[in-house]
Length: 107
Length: 130
Image (tube, rainbow over all chains, first blue to last red; front, side, top):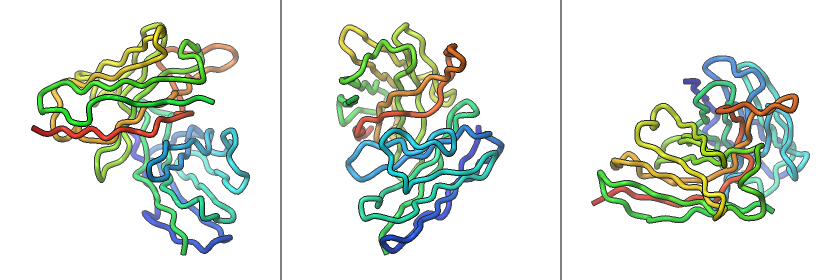
């Protein structure tokens, strides 16, 4: 199965600054990658699919890029409500697999 | 607005069957565009897709769990369920239900193929312990 590796494990960013999260696949997943946000006690939320398409209602400060094996989620101007764990997931190969997550904190 | 709510026992004994139900509101469970799936996250480990089912009775499972899992959809109750047999402590996890986007292209939806999880429930912690 495809192993998804996220880095860093934790990222600390000042409010209004940029946060950059990485996700690497053990083999090419083309553009078939999604990103999710999970806050404590809440349902995970789909942010991005198709590597770069924002899901309905997702603010424009969230953007995704990449293809093949290297992907990035960028939060252009971090807000306090963005403190959460973020996960990538590939759906190019069966079974679908997730990264181990990156925790975003406010500096 | 779609809502998904997991329900079921929080504690299950080893070797028994874990049974969870997800109640769907705000959308049709009979949609041809979606499967209905289960994902779990054991403590300290990554999220793991367990399997997904559809309204017609089709179900697709992660090979790592397929010998112990059954997922079914009840359209009369707008619910879908998970049964995981012969559980051990390794099955202790937060279990999520989710609406699973089916792979469709050019007006054709493909059986057994899905993409991302469009909506999720809040999750329920199930502990396996005697």
